Length: 177
Image 1 (cartoon, helix red, strand yellow):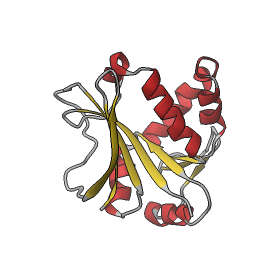
Image 2 (cartoon, helix red, strand yellow):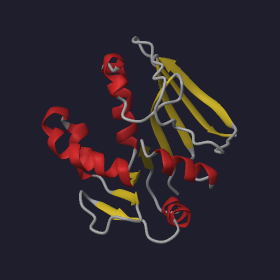
Image 3 (cartoon, one colour):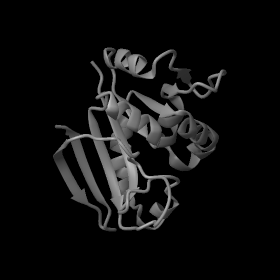
């Protein structure tokens, strides 16, 4: 049985969209941590917007990112979308009810990793389908922007680990309580 892990970038005030603010704080230790997350994943689980952004960027970044980019491009992607019709970039589109499709994926071998995909994270949280949340909280207050947690999303979590990067990024892992 697989596990679903959401790995998210977030500011101190909860903003997660387009993390251009992360650049000055991202370093080798965070890169190694992200690499470890990717290496333990067998496939990506993405919302449509994140899928489209990743699909546009990652194929061009393989040379500069080495084995990380190779794995990102080669691994299967499961995408929640109601508007796209032609899967590309090793993707399959989840058919029917997304919660049912994801629950079925969880019965199969292999771990799924979610990056970004805030609407999908919130939806799967409401359906108790995410097994672990790994959040990088950057020492930035964005002041505005899309928050990771949508109004009405509720979950009790249990802290399972944390550490701080040399640049002040708090990396915190939680499982549902």
